[in-house]
Length: 234
Image (cartoon, rainbow, N blue to C red; front, side, top):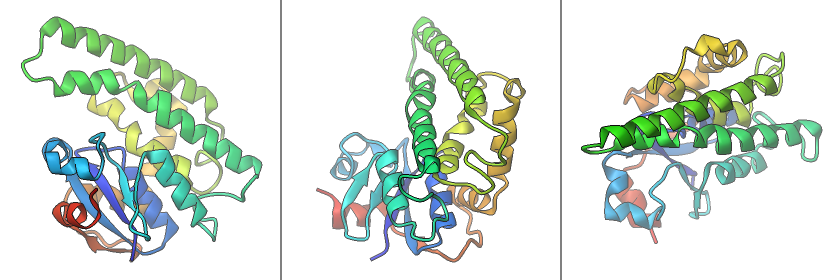
């Protein structure tokens, strides 16, 4: 069977993994998960008890959660090195370093902002504190990433790789939460624009929006979440 990526909407970090699958160029399927509805239902716990996306149903029918684990799965199957580099190479070490930073501190800095955004009948003072903490953390992590970015067109060179995929799904949250003007970080802003303008990310963004764009031909269609839960849920 083909692997199935469960991706979250709206604006899930998993959008970048759709782009990674397009860059990889091997057959796959998708399953869209409404994070504000379907993901909160008891049935979803059978797929991921932590109520998160992304989730990958592997070609062996195994349920794999966590972005880094899914990225490693894709790397191991990237025999043509379209989105990764030779094992034990300095480029692979650097890619893992960047992905780890983006997937932990950089992504985690947004958590208070999402908590404030998702609050029902929020206490104004609590919401304000969450926003202040979130804004400070996001700015700090952007400052750190700005220092880490070199002069390459993409994070690791002339072509996008898994690190670019992990980054682009989260980078847009800066604008969603209106933390600061993106021009404060010129390297990050330029990197975002280049990655976002690749055909794979344009495709992935359109998929998120419910459109049916023409991609690489690797996407074999969507699978309903109810079917994924029935077939692969614990």
